[in-house]
Length: 420
Image (cartoon, rainbow, N blue to C red; front, side, top):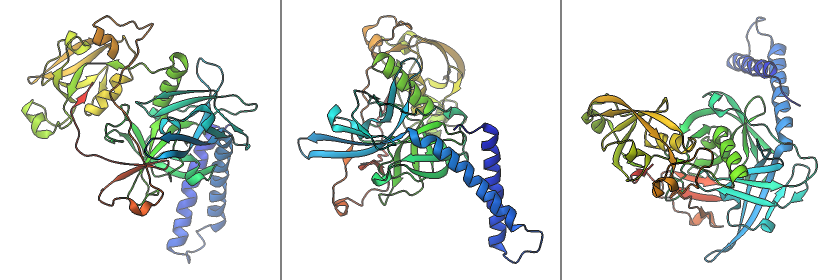
């Protein structure tokens, strides 16, 4: 059942008005006849009905995932997570999208997908993208219901969302919250981190086992794939991170169409410690954009004659916030596209045109072909460390820890120069 936009808007307004009514009653239960208790109760009840409709709409598309892989040091390791059923834009069939770390290194027969009706199936094919921590699994079963992609760019801070998945193995669990921040890009997941970082932050309860499950807007559409939590206790503390749906949908379409993801490449080393002092020395009023430390030979940046200490302020009309932002927007650009950069060079703004190519094309110094992009190469890896069964053995020396499914890894503050 689809939820019409007008019904959703009305539901949200009713929810707010109901909450205000409840707050007024809680503040002073002896209020006079101007307060209508029945009206407040009805408002909350109507809002609950809207949320229930959204939950019923998405629940048939969310699955529980279990996988087993073997390591030399730890032997057999079991992972659990969630996933959501989708359909590709150009490729027919039903597919389950999840986080790569939920199923990585597991054989097809060692990946068990539990469908909403209780049936259990194994995927027929698995496609993975390490740089975004996204995996796509082809499944064949009758009567599957695919979810619909939403537009994560239209999702704003304060918008209500639902997180759906299997926290601690409890399948079909739904939690409610809001988008509390956007464009979180400085998360170091493992030693090197994830290349494409532009996370949505939410206070909807996300716990181990939610990894790979969808973040849903008030129209019942996917706006993110739940990936990580920031926690000192091992559980939800109101800070969860989801990969935006626009990024996930692009990765999924490329995996289904090409079997891999093609990423454009600029060919510069960027300054991860570009601060206000350095910005003022380069004639900027504040720290913004991405400072170039060096240019690699035989790359698009070299051919465009970018220079050391250039500060890239905008890329194809997008204002650049920092080096991680530039890496993300460049890698998501079509291979072979011509883009304009706004660059601050020795105190003067100038425009530079760059013909983007794929990393492998740049290394070969041959022109890119937009119609047939070359294979992407990436140095960025996600290295994960599983939690020991006895959590009392964990070190308490870290200020901030991340947990994905039943995996744990540390946020690292020190960063090496970024390559893009």
